[in-house]
Length: 63
Ligand SMILES: [Zn+2]
Image (cartoon, rainbow, N blue to C red; front, side, top):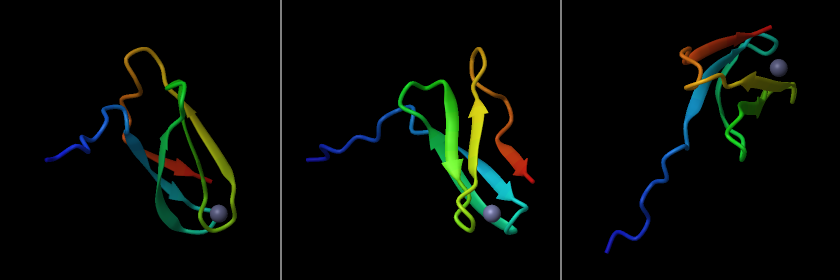
């Protein structure tokens, strides 16, 4: 009775927020055009546009 199948596309990137020295994840936006998220420490907005076939990098640094 597993009705909750994880949806594909719930991908995320690992982000290192240097502003607060915190590791966090950001998730794809609804349109699937970019990864968006905020620093859990200071709320700084981060947007990583997704190119053709998606970005190849899995981890990003934010300064
Ligand atoms: Zn921060």
